Image 1 (cartoon, one colour):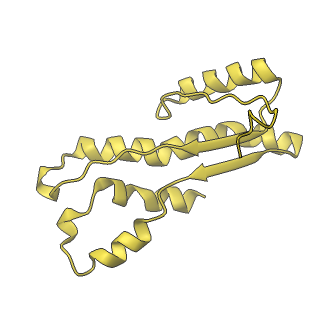
Image 2: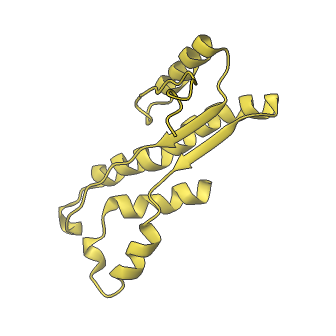
Length: 127
C-alpha cells in the first residue's frame, strides 16, 4: 500500500544506526516535525561473504554493529515513549533466511558462511 498516495503524511529518515547519538537526534527531529512517533521500522543490513580465512575481526564487528545494534538502539530509544503513551508499533526487519541457509549448509563447509549469517541470531533473540 502506498501510504502517501492514500493521503498519509510519511517521512523516511536515514541515519547511521550504529551511532546512538545520531539515532537520538533523528528521533528528536521526527518528534519535533510530527509531535510524536507512532511507528518505528528498523531494516538495515550489511553482508560480507568469503572464505573464513579472508575475514578479519573488524568485518564481524561491522556486521554485528549494523544488524544487532541497529535493531537494539532505536528500539530501546523509542520503547519507553511508546510504553508511556501505551501506544506505538515497532517493526524490526532482519533477514529471516538464516535458519534456511544454515540447514542447507550442513552438507557444505561452514567456512563459506558469511559474517552476516552469524550476526542475525542475536538480533532474533533480542526480539
